[in-house]
Image (tube, rainbow, N blue to C red; front, side, top):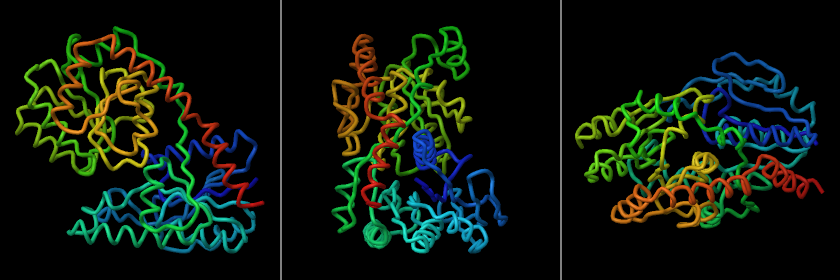
Length: 381
């Protein structure tokens, strides 16, 4: 089967969309399918590298950090993809490359499948001063885009329910994104872990809470900082790994809350180093409610970390509270559950082991690709 995957985001960008589509492409290739990728160039220059076609684009970071839009049809390269005659076109983003994907699918007479990765109503602060108006715009936009495809793939039942609530009538299938999980099983040696933690000012007896991801408003990291400031035990600390538009504000908040030395911002790290940072934490924490799936949650589980997450429907398919992680609804529950984890190493071990088992049972790349292939074949037959 020939599958064209289109995306506005691609390597070296690091986010959930890129991780999901790269793993999908790898899984499909391993199953014998021929894959090509259509994405945006980092400049006005269109070009090809291997099986990846890059079309010219310009940066529009004022609309959304690091976002880009195509500036020319790149007809030569689009014509080449049409002549390749894909059996399926699978779009991953709703903007520039979506319309190129639609054009190619229509020209080839093949089905267009779309993976819905972003809940736009959680990002209204980027494009609308009014939450109500922003949510309405997100609903109308999403319904319009998804009416133009033959099938929609979402990572969780939470997103399927949301889209059905928007009035989307296109068939929707929930398929968790697959991850290359084996790499997260590698733990640092005791000496290296101790040295790396010391580099951030953490001692051996400190209990380090780990947040890994974008530092953005919709992630509600301010909530974690506030909760931490109410914990008297100074040995409970927070390591934030990642960068984003909210970083400077969060650093200001941490200082204002008196968290100097307790809330440490590691910044952006090389993707090859991410796995090592999971080894530095004792407990993975997040207050986000904007996740479609939360790939870093799965990574943390594969690393054997106990999770303490704000309760959200996206976790219904992932965390069984008290079995493979813990979820909280308010600050009182957060403090109670954190105290349990900090005082009971055996509980942490059991939750971590169950978390790893869940990750490997449900989030393999092969399973992800097999499920996507089943959707494709259902449209072709």
